[in-house]
Amino acid sequence: ASHTGALASSDAIVDALFGQAGVIRTHTIEEMFDVARLLAHQRAPRGRRVGILTNAGGPGILAADACEALGLSVPRLSDASTAALRALLPHEASVGNPVDMIASARADQYARAGTIMLADEAIDALLVIFIPPLVTRSEDVARAIVEVHTAARDKPVLAIFMSSSPVQPLLRPIPCFRFPEAAASALARAAVYGEWLRRPESPPPSFADIDVPAARIIVDGALVAGTRWLGPIESQALVAAAGIAVASGEVVTSEAGAVAAARTLGFPVVLKAVGPEIVHKTELGAVVTGLRSDEAVSRAWRDLTARLGTQLTGGFVQEMVRGGVEMLIGAVEDPIFGPVIACATGGTLAELLADSQFRLHPLSGPDAADMVRALRGSRLLAGYRGSAPSDAGALIDALLRLSTLVGLCPEIVEIEMNPLSVLPQGVRALDVRVRVEPPRPRPPARRVEY
Image (tube, rainbow, N blue to C red):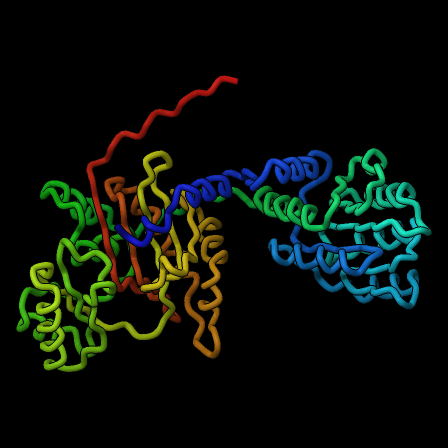
């Protein structure tokens, strides 16, 4: 019923599981064997920076485009490398990256240019492309590429031979591809795997300031009362017990009560409709913002009651938090994998944008940081088009506290803070929804014999 639940497809959950467990996921059997062929004989790259060496400009550009599209980078070479390549190659050659040696390139130039590029500190892996011209034999170039790899085994080398010449036996242990895109795809997956291998073990953090008794009282009380969806006050109190700041508010049942609550909180305020059938408030026009006077609150109350009728059982008057970047954090219980934690670009367009990241509970610090970093909307946190930077560290902290909360209270089967306003300092949960159920036993693990 929440945005989190709608976004958390089974495929997204499996993707999260594989990513945390270090499983390399491919889309086709061919890709699977491409990656296996690379990692069976060479190390995973130490980073995502790729050097491209070619004797034809077009395939070099296609390789660079494929690398960029797959999350790899094609950096500039150092001045020393550029000077060495300029001294080696003809004047017509391009000594940037990609390095285009032009069609006259000899096998010995492949060997020397490849060695120069692999020695550059800006390069983590090398793609070598060869299209057979009339002047250079494929077999000689294959041996030259093996020579390059032998001299620098700490960096992977991939060959792309766009020809029908059977040079694969001569290239071993270097994987050989027919086209640049397949090589870039295999290398990109190996680079992600290399990052996973280098990642230090990091246990989930513990928070001494989480009020566990208060959280348990709220959850246990809801279960005793037979409640499934907590009210706004209980939901906010539960999140506050986890140490996540919330926007102050008060539940009211009348127009006069709404006006009195607004005066207590201080203008401007937000008025939200409350009712068991009201799920996504904005779709029903059940949120009115920027109310700056008693009269405005009264008009908003009368409008909501007229439009929503019996769906409205009360209202929630809340302080209005200005500024910040709207994000979403939440968790949903998966019947197989348990709690799944979500982080997304939030607000009313959360499902439409589908800019979301998932991880399985419990989260470690690196897990939470990776989730935020992987969002396209993370650029908003750094300050976009003159806006002030937001506190990304506080967002990461909120994710970790949310993961801890669902571990302490396994009865929480769905929880969402949307929007969670990420401010220049700290975060504020503006809308919180929580659903609880008695814990159910998970299916036992099955042993599979091969």
